Amino acid sequence: MDQTTNALRGEGIALSFGGIKVLRGLDVEFRAGEITGLIGPNGAGKTSLFNCLTGAYLPQEGTISYAGDPLNGLPPAARANKGIVRSFQHVALCPDLTVRENVMMGIARNGSAGWLSAFLPLPGGTREREEMARSADEALADLGLPDVGDKLPGELPPGMQRLVEIARAVVGKPSVLMLDEPAAGLNNSETRDLTKVLRKLASTDLVMVVVEHDMDLVMSICDRIYVLNFGEFVAVGSPEEVRSNPDVVRIYLGSDDDE
Amino acid sequence: MSDQATHIIPGQSVVSRLSGMATSGLTTAVVVAVLIFMPLLLGGSWTFTLGLCFANSIGVLAVSLLVRYGGEVSIGHTFFTALGAYSVGVLDTRYGISLWASVPLALLLGVVFGLLFAWPSRNLHGIYLAVTTLALALAVPEMINNFDVLTGGYEGLYVATPFIPGIEMGLQRYYVALFMLVIVCLAVARLRLSRQGMALLLAKAHPAAADAFGTRRVWARVSIMGISGGIGAICGATLAFSGSTVSPGGFTFWQAIFLLVGSVVSFYGLSLTRVLIGGAFVTLVPQLLSASGAWIPVLYGLALLGMILLGHYMPRIRKAMNRKAEAN
Image (tube, rainbow over all chains, first blue to last red; front, top):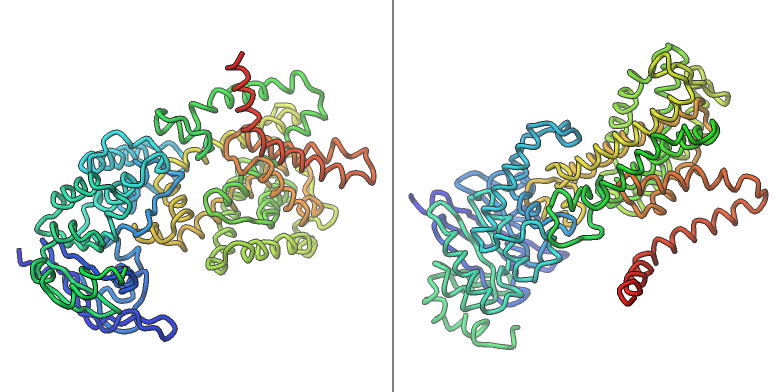
């Protein structure tokens, strides 16, 4: 498959809050079949770019499209229906739902059981719930969490909660998967597991974008990396190219002052 | 019955844990069984009062549902209870139509007006939405009086058509209310397990996450107001039938406040036992205090304070008692 056909593209994305320019006319292309990293110091605009791509923010300028379809103006829910899903920088699981049910929310939008089934024990609704639960269990098992479905998110350590978020994002077999700092709060062992999981998830028709501060993780899994600083890209390229870029070394990789 | 996010016991299955079936199912069954036999033990006036208590419990449930699934507080639910009550009252007195038709109409009107209220107020939250619902509560008595051709104005309406002909009306007023309460509680427990219910809970906890997975916040807000309005209307329909009269005095601003008080007293619980506590507080406390004259507001306040403190400290008291029992 042509990697660029099903790409998530942004052209000239500009976002500002009250005169503060957060993103300054960014051009991006996240290709299917690749894991793309988005790195930069805190406040560089990574999450803002994520929010623009997923519809949480509406940029003042620029166009966003997926596989040629324009996404501008579409709310997040409509983008989700197109298979564009994300995880969050701060874990956003529902504390009142079990782990399994949280993951089920990744495919609940595809359900067809109506309001009558919501209040009455009709077979259609029951069957749909069972199918969703089965898919959620499979997604959890794929991420190495086979036995936590009945627990509440608050009963899991932060690392597992991150994985549950990823399970929720991947259970619906998305076309674009955007992970916002998936390794935040994970210990070394959990990060290693996450690396394996992300590699396993990568496929020829999936656009995967990872915002991450863990350079080892980014360098080991990403095919291409965008480096963002003060709302502008300072480098784009393979991990080797980025690693050897003097600007990147100066502003991010080699400097503790930016953290 | 649904009473999620409370008393989690690791290892229980999801259905039993979250619908509360395992932890409260037996209690609920025992409570319902006792209530079924109550009329055999109690006099007519207590049977009548308990019927009202069941009806008010449904209203408490409507308010609690809005809190638990929508994260919002209503101080105007008498608007919906009035809709339900007058659906029953008007159809009964004007057309002789019984609950078989008037309850579905009440439900429909409650849902529709809940949706109509929710749409323009969809972006209001917290105290702003609560004050907006206050407008509903304040408007209700005047609206009822102005439509006196239909509503009977101050005099109100008398509901006399039996639900099931041939059965003594006093018993019907009790058992219909109990039946409605059980059905509504079961429906709410079912909602908790549905994709719509889960989406509402996610939208309440993390609106951005709900948005990102296809649940629009506006959908969530409008839906929960519709559901809560519908249940509020069923409360009104049940009140009309069990109380036998429908008049503006039953749908004042204070009644709306009492429903909220009942919801708080039951700690926004959605299980049958919890909403019964709220309904009992709304119904029984004023009756028990009715002979106290000028002391009624003070005693009511003390009773409210006592209930809240008891509920707040109960887990600690229980824990201390368990420790003591283990030590012995």
